[in-house]
Image 1 (spheres, rainbow, N blue to C red):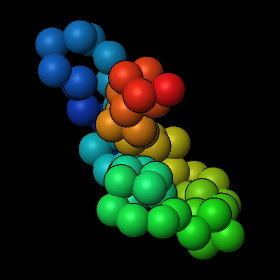
Image 2: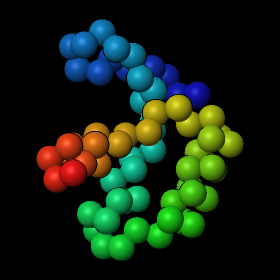
Image 3: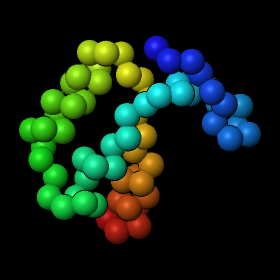
Length: 64
């Protein structure tokens, strides 16, 4: 696992390296679910514990 860093001034510690998941949404065009699952499974295999999903969560909240 990568070194931990503080998230802003929250006191929350997260890994310095993570998986950005925005490209797995339809934001850039049609998502490929099979490819996304391969990426997520690989992230699990290499013990990636920080998945940045913030934009997708915000879009879901705003647009249902």
